[in-house]
Image 1: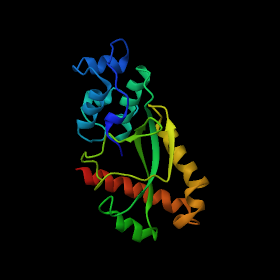
Image 2: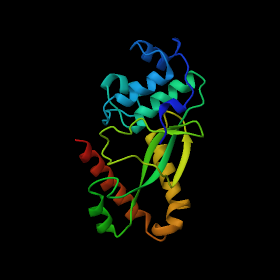
Image 3: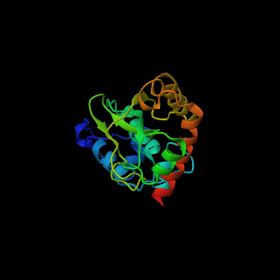
Image 4: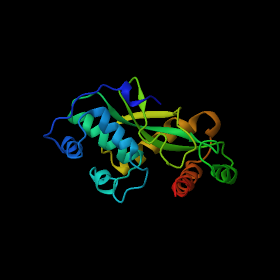
Length: 197
């Protein structure tokens, strides 16, 4: 992933929801807002659909951290967007994954992760956080640009569609039933949550 300073920077002006939230904290530029969000602890929020939850709970996941910054970018007319990608979760990336891979006889688990992009650079505001992973995600099997506040349902629909139309049709997961992958995904989510504690 790339550093935040690859994105355009601009002063934050009051008068919109996200801008007002950042200026109330004394944050005056887009880059400073990105750094503030990056430096917040990684943690699951009580309501991922509440964009303001990041400010209330002073923590966030890839979903909420990137939703807030993509919303701010939209308010500021900056070409920075939230994306969802599917990556290959392995033991190297997430400790504890091998038990799932052996259980289902699969080489990796397709998992989702959010990041920001200006269609040239990719920035992950959870990179380096205690996010359950052993390092950064540098490769994605499939990505899509989404609205900052994409619902959990629509994110899941993207995931299932990418499995059905692309990931389970080729390569090492070809022919593996979707049910197996979805079970592996649920167990993978549990490992990620356990690894951040």
